[in-house]
Image (tube, rainbow, N blue to C red; front, side, top):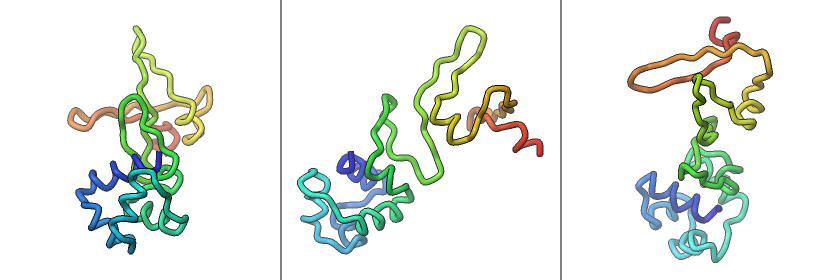
Length: 129
C-alpha cells in the first residue's frame, strides 16, 4: 500500500523521484527503493512525506484504493466509495461516513446542490444552526 500511494502522490504532484528525494532529504536511490517496496522509510520520513502531500500519515501508509481507483485523499477529505441510488432515490450512507460525521438514525440531513459542482449532504443542525 505505502509504495503505491507514494508513487501516486508523487505523480499527482508532478514531481520526479529526484525532486521528491531532495525535499525529503534522501537519495533518489532510496526513494526508488521505497517506491518498489524494497525498503520502507522511518517514521520521521513518513511524517515529512505526509505533510508534503497534505495527507494523513495513516492514509499514506494504509490507504487502499477502492473500486473507484481513487488516490489517497487530502487531509480532512474522504472518499467513501460508491453508493447505488434506489428506485425511490434513496441511498445508504456508508458506515465509515456515519461514524466520522456522527450520523444517527433520526438525524435530519440537508441535501444541497450546485449544477457545476454536484450534490452535498450536511447535517441540518450544522447548516441551519
